[in-house]
Image 1 (cartoon, one colour):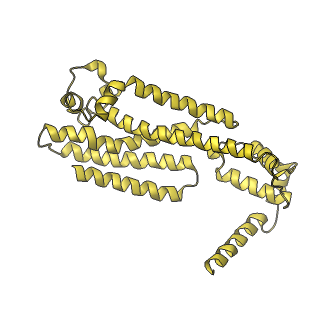
Image 2 (image 1 turned 90 degrees about the horizontal axis):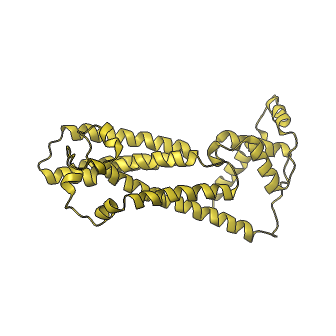
Image 3 (image 1 turned 135 degrees about the vertical axis):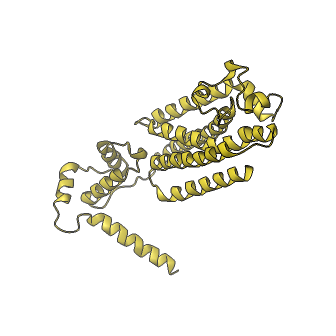
Length: 280
C-alpha cells in the first residue's frame, strides 16, 4: 500500500511539473492541479476499497500517513485556486491586506486545532485507534462535519484533519512568500524614487497591440485586470498617453495585411537574438 501511494504521489507531482511549463495563467494551472489530484485520489480509493489491511497498525498507517499525503494536494490546490481568484483588484496595499487576512484565518485554524496539531506533530499514537480506524464514533464532538457526509469505507474521523494540516501548512508558506514579494515590490518602488524612469519611445499603435495581447492572454492579475486599468498602468510606467485606444484597436482590426505588425516584429527580433545567443 505504501509503495502504491508513493507512486500515485510521484505521478501527480510529475503532472504538476509538466503543467507548470504548460500553463501561463496561474488559475488555469491550479484548476488543472485540482483535477489531477481528484483523479489520483479516485485511483487510491478504488484500490483501498479492495485492499485487505493485515492488521490495525497497517490501517492506521494508511489513514494517518499515506492517504493524507495524497489528499492534501487536493485540499491545497483547491484552497490556492479559491485564494487567488478572490484577490481583489486594487493597489499594493489592498492586495497585501487581503493576504494578511487569509493568513490570519490559517493562524485561527491552527489555534482551534492546537490539541490535535500537537498530537500529530509529536507523532503521538495513544489515540490512533480512535482517530485512524474506520467506524469509531466514541467522541462525535471531535469530528469535522464532513465526516458524516463522506464514504465511511474510505475515511476515519481524523484523516481529513491531517490532510488539512498538511495543506494549510503549505498554504501558509505560499501566502508568506506572497507577502514577502509584495514587500519587496514596495521596497523597490521606494528605492527607485528619483531614478530615471522608462519612457515608451516606440509607436503608440505598437504599445496598444502589446497591451491588448497581454490582456487577452490573461497574464496580468490572473486575467482579472480590466483593459482600461491595464492601459492606465502602462501609460503611467512608460510616461506616455495612449489616447483613444479602442479606436486604434479597431483600426488594427481593419488592416488588410499583418494585423499584429508590432508583435510579429517582437517575435522575429527575439528569435534572431536567440539564434545569435545559440551561436556564441
